[in-house]
Image 1 (cartoon, rainbow, N blue to C red):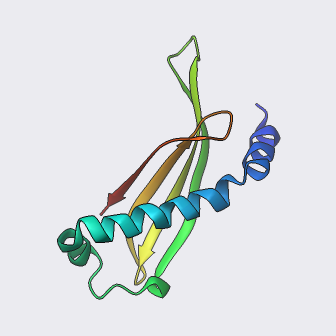
Image 2: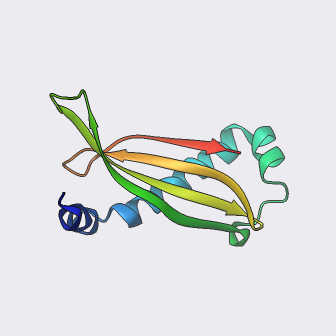
Length: 106
């Protein structure tokens, strides 16, 4: 398995940086569009108390065995006030374009 190739892809396409930027866009929209739910999950929210870290980077092969629909999936782990608060997942095509993203709040 070519792990170094995957690392090179992530670096060249700036997936780590782009994932964090996309997270903040999604998170800020969540706060605006679902403020009541947001306040319940993140009372008195302060951005400096939210820690993000890369949980996983994975090559996902879908439509096995034809493998015609594949993605690199980056998962960010969220900790708010030192508690595990959720997970943000973003899927990139093998060309480095964003295909989909989602946020799960715990």
